[in-house]
Structure formats: C-alpha cells, structure tokens
Amino acid sequence: MSTRDLYVQDPGDPVWKVPASGAARFSWDYDDGRDRLLALYQKGKDKQWDATLRIDWDQEVDPCDPLGTPDESMSLYGTRYWDKMTEKDRGELRQHYTSWQFSQFLHGEQGAMVCAARIVESVPDLDAKFYSATQTMDEARHAEIYSRFLQEKIGMLYPINDNLQALLSDTLKDSRWDMPYLGMQVLIEGLALAAFGMIRDTTTKPLPKQILAYVMQDEARHVAFGRMALRDYYKQLTDAELREREEFVIEGCYLMRDRLRGLEVLENFGIPHDEAAEFTENSEFLHLFRKLLFSRIVPCVKDIGLWGERLQRAYVDMGVFEMGDSNLDLLMAEDEEIAEKLDAERFAAEEEARTAEVAAAIAEGADEG
Image (cartoon, rainbow, N blue to C red; front, side, top):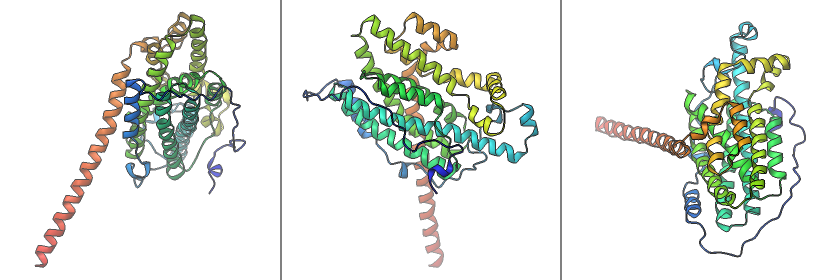
C-alpha cells in the first residue's frame, strides 16, 4: 500500500518545492575550531544509533488507544458531540488525534533534515558544518521512526499543517545563513521537544514512550548546537539586525501556537470549523498544553540574546514570559537520563530473560540425566 493511501486528506502534490536562496559557503580553514562545538560533534558521532535495532518494534499498539493518555486531553471531551459518541467512535477519535500529532512530528522531522542539510551548505564555519552533518543523519532517523510508527502501528497519516508549512517555508526561503538555525533549531525543534516530552511523560504505552525518549536524546544535542552557534554570532549583530530576527521569532511563535489546535481532526468528524475552534479555545488541557509547549523556546531565545522589548511583550501576550527563567540545561540533562534509563531497564530485562532461559535449559538437562 502506498503512503498516500493512508492519508486522511489529500496531501496535494507529491513533492513540495521551496525556492532556495543564499550562498553555499566553503571554508578552507581546517584548524580545529571551537572546542565546545567539536565536543558536540564528537558526541553526535558517538551517539548514532539504528532505529531498527534500538527500538523494540514487536511491541503491539492498539490503534484505538495508541497512547493511553486521558480522554480529557482531547478538546471534544465533555461536549455534546462527545456524549453522543459510541466507544467505537471514541476509539477512532483517539486514533485520529494520535495520527495528527505524530504526522506533524514526521513532517517537522523531514523539515529538520532539510534545514540541517541547508546549514551544512550555508554556514561559514567548518566545525558547524561537521556537527550539522551528524544532525542531518539524526533527523533522517527520526523521520524514519515516525513514518514507521504511523504506517505500521496507527495506519493513518495527516497532511502537514498549514502553519507548520508556512514557518518551514519562511525558514528555508531566507537567504541569511543563521535563519535555518533560528527557525528550525530554536522554534520548531524547541516546540517539538516540549510536545515530545509531554507525551513521553504521560503515555502509558511502552512503544511511543521509547520512541519519544530516544528521539529527545538526539534533539537535546540539536538545541545545544543552535544555542552555541547563534549566541556567538548574535553578539556581533547590530540592534537593527537583532530586531529583524526578533520579528521572525514573534511571527513564528504565533504561527506555532496557532498550529497546535488539531482542528483538522474535529472537522474530519463533521464538526463545523467555528465550533471546533471554540472547543479548542475552551479546553483547559489544551490551554496548559499550549503554554507548556514554549518551555523550551522562551529560555533558548533569551539565552541567544534575542530579548528586546517587543519580543518580551509578545511573550507576555502569549502568557509564557515567565518561562524565560526555565533551566534549559537541566531539561536537556533529564532528556538524556530518561533515554539512558530506558536502555538500562530494557537490557536488564533481556539479561534476566537470558539467565532464566539458561537456568531452565540446565534444569531440563539435569532432569533428563
């Protein structure tokens, strides 16, 4: 079956072409480069992994309850439409919501792969090119994982959301070499990390928890890379140049905030657009979800030196200004620890199973003797 057959709605042309601008930059300076960035490059090489081997794909997933999260997380919960639904209808709604969320993750990861490749091409420093090459591989692996999860376990995909597509387009069309960093590493990756983390920490199902934990371990390095490169570069910019980038961040944050409503899902269930928008606006869970999604972006934007008055006012308007004081390093360290703990638990369980198998074989041999 073709992937296109699994789309709930027609995704349009099979290839989306974004006009590219800007220069491909070569560097003839092969000195060692910045120690911090080269250390991150080494870590990027050391931490490569095979999604086919590290993830236990034999774990079953119920498409009608893929995540095991509370029904209150769906904006339709508690409405008259929800009350009329059968349990079968509610199972289909859970399937659609998960498909919509993970489809956006999938499309975003392909966008991240393209942006990382663009950084390899356009960034002037060789140490940054080295690291971006490892990130391009990471993002390819993430797209592979989400594609497999959607096709094999959920059986359904959604097209890319309009707002995510708009931000990707703006990021890729800009000729300035730092914009793929800012649009992808800070905004899209930062938002995705927060979304991944909320699902990782609330799902009761082992396969999606494993997938998200391992992807987040990679993403923690990517955000660190963006912070290092942009913090160094933005110290050299004029106030006018910094304001231009702050305008891009403001517009991007509003786009991303408005992206996370899932109206496509509700409209697929026959709910008029205006009612669907009202349900999402009134959902207490989605209010909290949308606010927490900026927990990774706001401190990163502040850290790289974009913290002008207009940007601060925008974050006050979104209700996320106080997140500028979040400890981003602590969040990233926790992401690493959770993935390593999952690995340790899995290896311990496998070792226990092997030990039990050997003991059983020995006992069987003794009985026969």
